[in-house]
Length: 355
Length: 277
Image 1 (cartoon, chains in turn yellow, orange):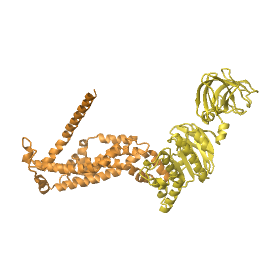
Image 2 (cartoon, chains in turn blue, yellow):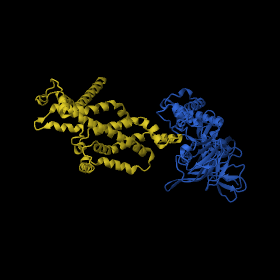
Image 3 (cartoon, helix red, strand yellow):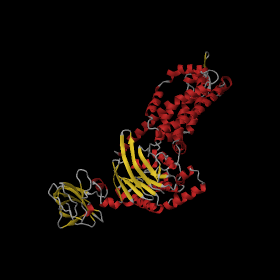
């Protein structure tokens, strides 16, 4: 097990720079999730870590050692691919033991390690099967088993759950997390799904266009997003954003262009600012007797929650109520933001206004 | 109404069956006639009206082996074909793999490969003859092998590349990550997966080399002529020895048919690989 340092790493394809000088550290035993929209560079970074892509600039370090020029097979990193990449002509046992066979390990050792990994992943009865005879979840476990058997210093996961159905994804998420808690191997996990990131990570790295937008624990990113991009990316449904004009700089008073007052109970000084972007998470809005006036457009009861699609001054806003609500489309309601839950952002740079 | 649509369906089926029967007849009749020619006397072959009931004879085959020495032609064909197929597959498979998975700049090479296929063999017949003469390689196995390998490699690379491309690139990446060298990826991962395609390619190359006539005619005389050339000798001043011609044609075509029959599973596998996900 080891820590991994990404220091000013750059990736260029000809004249196109897809990752301009990225730097952060993954601590020993940490479960770090790289999350971001498609094309943000997260998979490219993972492949550079694995040695499957060349690094155009900067350094990759495992511990104190620079590994830029070390070939993939010597990096002691095991990668789990999105499409599992199981060898179709080998059985489950042969797939899992392949890396050790290449290293000419004794047969007894290979069998022992394969059996041990199979027991952890519930694959003991499937060792003689071929990948074509397995379900998606079983194939994913075999892919993880192949990685575990190698006993690497770092696990790399490249969107491993993307090809699974929703129910299986939830189950496998928990299994992967439990596996990490058991094995405590440094893990870098790539996903575009922010729910996976929030539920699995010790630390999340939000990427956009090759840059790190913010890095922190899931709750840090949820409670104090650094900018509009992170605020909109983390959380499902996404945060609501409303443009607002500062009415009084030293007293919390904001209004939308349509004249709707937005209550802000703890607000940084807005001196010198005339406009802000007001952000409020759907789950932080409650029904009240007063507050923000809204008109209900669509009601979506999910059983344990009720999602409301409303308009505030003609602008679309999503509300998630943790209880069942007796509201109907067309009804006028009042929304009250939970205390201290509003976020303010600079409308030009998108950065969080912290005072 | 139901009866009329059933009648229509039956009529359509009958018409299609008739069509396929005619097509099968057109394809199979010449070959069948050729086989029959090998097993009957020449006079039965040229008689009018044609005789389909006759006394079978092996006189044609006897003439082939006792007078013509046909076994030499068959051995020459076998040697040239087997060596050529092995060399073509041996060179083309790694090249096709590299073009499919390793090289990012194979486009120009692929175009060159396709251009090589466009050139008709007759256009390079004279230069090939002159080169073989200068190198003192006329009437040798190696001359035939070299020219057949050169002619068939582009086709084999082009065909096998498509089979290698059916293998997902992440399999190569997974193998590299597991510790494979590029050669180990090729031998342990890729080859087992494209075996059907490779055998299909081998069958096509086998058929092409076995039946190759032009370069055999140009480059050989008495030592290394191949089986397709044998039939030239049966047209004499006294007429055509039809029984020997039929026997020779039967013997030349049989190995190819048997080989293709044995390999048909791989042929189908190779031709349909990747067509159904």
